[in-house]
Structures are given as structure tokens and as C-alpha cells.
Length: 283
Image (cartoon, rainbow, N blue to C red; front, side, top):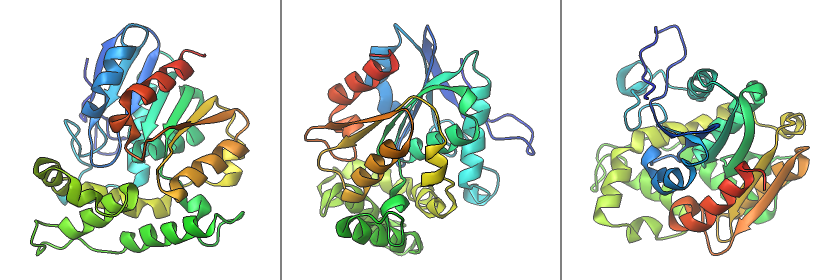
């Protein structure tokens, strides 16, 4: 079964999703720069107990972009409404796992339509604004420095004149922010090319953070069983923001993946997948 963006233009976009397995629905939302294929191993582990719905976000994989040149009509609200449309099409409230930007989209949707969710598991959702400059309570000095850097990155335009391809320098800053200095340079040629090809989508994702509705007050009111996962070596802002969110939500827990960074669902898939499924199964 597949979900395609074939709805009227005045309706929410529909995310394409590959659906396998049987049981209660488990929706998987990938990180920026990736697609639903990042969950191939998790899908294989889960499909005996769940109907796994591995979705491509707007403009990624087999999901068409939002209308307009290059998906120019895309906003965070457009993405969230597309997820809500997908969840509304399922036969029962879904367990949802989101990584990074996919985690932010899932959290935004849960704040709007909590009845569509049975449980929520998030690996470092992009809610770093909660610990940035001016946040109350304030994040650590390191977290504030990191958030100031990613905020500055939001304002950097995509250059078509970069020697490595359109947006190559922006992608380098984006990858290095999440994974440490030199991370982009250490990628294989194929991986670098792939991230550069998706630069405009990733750029929109970063810029959209200014439109998020996630706040401490909103999180306090979300009575949904939620589990956060963070990587031991991830950016301080990513870890602190998840820890803060878990501390204020009524039914939230948090766990750290030893040795993992922000891309833990890929680099430490076995450990992450085990924790995700244990939580979703209620253990």
C-alpha cells in the first residue's frame, strides 16, 4: 500500500509511504538529508508486530514537493499537515518514531492532534531553540553557542557557484554542526554528492525552525507517552534540549545511546532499534 500526493491543492499534501507488516501502525519519519530507506533495518525488525509505515517527507524519495518552483510553497506547517493527513488515514492511533527533523515534525503534529498518536519516540528532535540564547530556563554556555551557530546558518543562502556544487559550503556547515568538525570531509564521495543533491530541502528544514510551535508551555500540556533518545557524543544543544523536554512532559522518559552521535539511528542502528521497539511494545 502506498500513500501519494494526489489530493486537491487546497488540501494537505499526502506523504508517500511504504507499508509492510501487520499489527498496530508504526510510523517512521526520517531525518533531513535522508529518506524512508534509512529505516530498512528497523522495518525488518518491527514488521512481525507492527504495520510499519515508512514515510518520505515532502520533496524526498517518492513524495512530491509542495507546489511551487522547487517546492517554494513549503513551510513547516505544510509538512506537519501532511503528516496529520497520513496519520488520519490509518485505522488506529499510531506509534511514531522520528529522527532529527522527522522528530520535530512528529512532535509538532502531536501537539496539534494528540489523539492520532498511541506513543511517540524521538531521537534528538530539532528543538534546540529551547536551550538557545534568550531561552528560559537558559541552556548551558556551550548549548547557547551552538544554537547561535545554527541560527546564523539559517540566514546563509544557497550559492550556485560553490566549487563542490550548488550549496556545497552550506551543506558542509550543516553536516559539521550536527556531527562535529570535519564530518563532511570524512563522508564518501557518494555520500557528499547525495547530501549536496538534497541541499535545498535541508536548507528549508533548517530555516523552518523559526516557525516551530514547540515551547516549554506546550510540552507541559502534552500527555502522551513519549521516549527521547540522545547520542552520547551529539551536540550539547541537541542533548540538552531533549533532556529539558523530557523533564517537563508529564509522561516522558529519556535514554542515552553510548558512543552514538546525532546519526545514531544509522551508525548505531542495532542499539537504537532495540530501544525504539522495546518502548513501542510497552516494555
